[in-house]
Image (cartoon, rainbow, N blue to C red; front, side, top):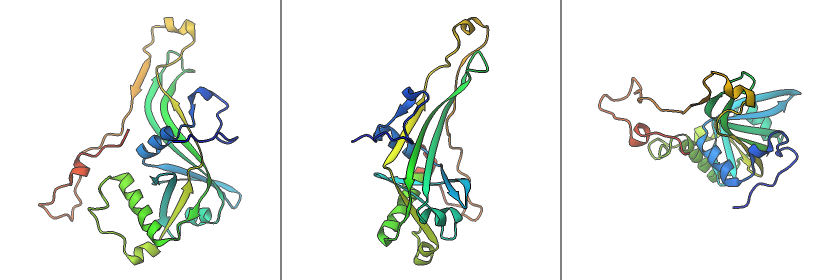
Length: 218
């Protein structure tokens, strides 16, 4: 799998050792995340919107209402920056200055386009649904023609992207290692709770295995 080529926008100038252009690293982070933040400029005003997404090979899909300001603006060909961040731990140092976080993040630059082909649009919606809960698409009613018309799907080629990752313990100034202060990492994880049934669900309905055993890929 060919790595991403660094560009002026994706090359890390501060702490470059944390950067990665490996396609596999970028894809693993995207596949584990649930929310991306979409940044763009509309009417001279910078805007950042959180939304769900899905990935199919080297394409990122986002969707929403056909009336969505964000999607209609992006469909017009404006430049976009999409970010995904996974927070793995709080890094507690001996000094306030050196506190940090362990994280994995991806930044993607490019120009999105509306998905016009009906088959690709249907597949994109399946990809987004499966990204959120694997196996869910086969459990539910698929979108009908009216719902498809009300939905706008955008695709963003994964051509200009990079990852940034921090791992490990705090890095303190050498004299501070003698301080009587606890230091280390406090891991953080997304842990699903017990499923809560819709009040209008039939009393004898049980959640499917993909809900009961839900987890994110790592």
